[in-house]
Length: 200
Image 1 (cartoon, rainbow, N blue to C red):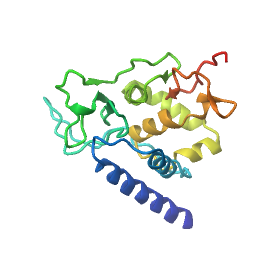
Image 2: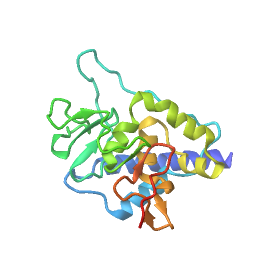
Image 3: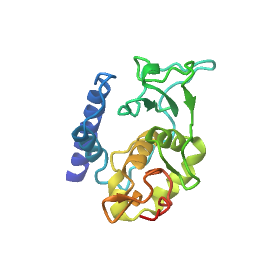
Image 4: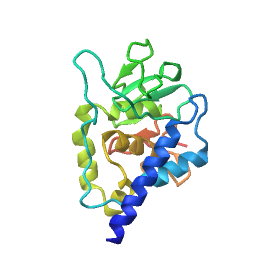
C-alpha cells in the first residue's frame, strides 16, 4: 500500500541520516537544523502494526561486550549515552560508537539529575535512565494509552533506544504557554507525568 511505501521510505531516510550523523566528527555537535531534520524523520506516522523491539540486537559475551557498533546520542558536547545505557564523556567514546566501560566516567543506567516523575536536567541521563529494563512497562503503557495524535509522533522508532532518544527530546509536556519550560532544570522527560510547574 501507499502508506507502507511511505513508511519504508521514512525508515530508510532515518537509517541513512543516523548513519551519516554517526560519521560526523566526534568533536562537532549537531546544528539545530540537523537535530530538527533528525527529529522530523524519527517522528512520523505510527503504523498500528508496528511494535517496539525491547531487546538490543547485539550478542553479548559473558565477560565483555562483543559488539561491532553502538548507536549513541551523538549530540552532547561533553556526555554521550550509548544504546546499552552507558553514559560517558565524549573523550571516552570508542571508535565503534560505544562508551568505554572501563573509563572512570562510564556508568550504566544513570538517573543522576532525574526526578521521581521521570524528568531530568541532563538529556544523556534521561536517555540512560529510560533505558533501564525496569522502565519498559512504563514506556509500553505510554505507547498503549497515547492518543492517536501522540502515537503518530513515534512511527519510525524501532526499539527501546530510539524510543528513549525521542521521548527525552520531544516531550510537549515540558513546556507551558508553548514557549517556556515548565521546569527549566528538569525538561528532559521519559515518564508520563509532566514536569512540575514552577512559578514564573
